[in-house]
Image (cartoon, rainbow, N blue to C red):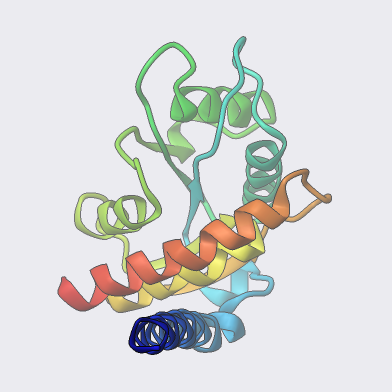
Length: 200
């Protein structure tokens, strides 16, 4: 009887802890999304942005951009050709033969963006690092950030915490396989970067 009562207490305590954790996760995510949702849309030359920060993603063997990265580049290149920005800051993992930044740059040049309009950040190993480096190494105080919408909330939140005036342009040009997994992972990533913003 006593053992059964103890087990019930342990179970109830564990359930309460899980519920509390879930509430905290949702709360922090609502804060990040609620604070930044209004900053996602379109930009034009009249908005006064000069640079688009393009966040890196996977490059396949042979140098082929993943679908998500290709769409990020297409979106940023369209902004450049429309005159909404005059510089593309390409940030990602620049290591190895299939360097994200190297192949992002090659793609942009193939699409008519002159080399002098491209900045490369080969040490953008995470969203936080990409945005932080845009501010501290590349002197960006006002940015258009280009990535898929689910990712934009976090990137803009980081930028605004760092004192960057940021607008997000979604690169969702199609539906992507595995999006449910990315959405779940992003919930945890928002918590991580929310904490980094508080600590830094």
